[in-house]
Length: 366
Image (cartoon, rainbow, N blue to C red; front, top):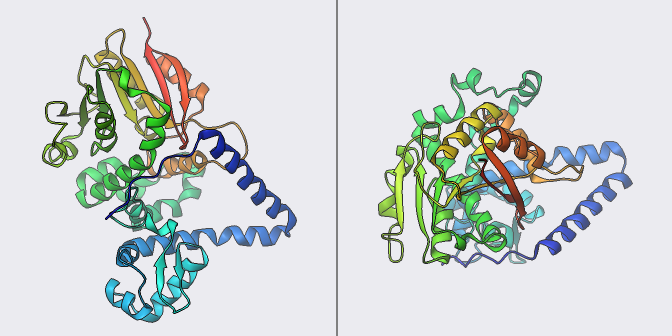
């Protein structure tokens, strides 16, 4: 049985720990010869790919009931025993799994999240990261930097979202991976922002509805609507409607470039705006603006790019947007303010959370 999602530590504590961790890493890089530090950086991708292989093989799920001897584990996941031993040697050294004195392998706190049934599971995210198409786009990062655009049209003949629409198996992996990321951010969002003062929320591009369902479960008087493409929404009612949600949760399909449901108190866009360049992002926001009444609020949940030079997840994800979307990017607070102003909104405030995401709150300009 999966354990409950852990509570997020206080934001000041997380910031202090991150500062301390980044400082130690910077100190290490300064104390070793430059070529050694560079060589160490070159190995990071190997551990990531090995973790992707572990996700695809289902190793964490096979260890969910307890430690297993190498030969038994190899049989359980359908792998060559010697090759699996070599894979696990790297993963154990990286702390992903652990090996006991009797030679058996077991889960660690890290690999618990590779289980498909974990409260916060990242298995689908690693399946996406290890996917051949995803690796291929990053192989062409140099071309994307040279030309300032994704190479998807050259590689697949179309953009990623169009490709996912025409290849449901790819779209399914992507949707599950994004649901994984959404579940990871839900607890920090709920702790930092009070959704309870609204009567109704529309989650635009809400995917499988995980975030909105979590919000509704915590606020019994709140009503919500998941709005997404028809292929996403069509199977959601039978999956999500249950005790406490029937009559409070509805589903509508369409394109946020054309129209969205009208008359709600709040409009939520989580990880939507960063998928698009400024022109398309303005089109989306203007569509939402048309549906909103004067007192309604727009809630954009995205990473707000920091101005400092320390490590930050947004700096990685920004390049992910470059190689995989047509114009998508992470934005600074100033860039969000300008984008909102051009789209008919006024930026009210930015609420930081214990996760990389922030809540960017805005209201219609009149």
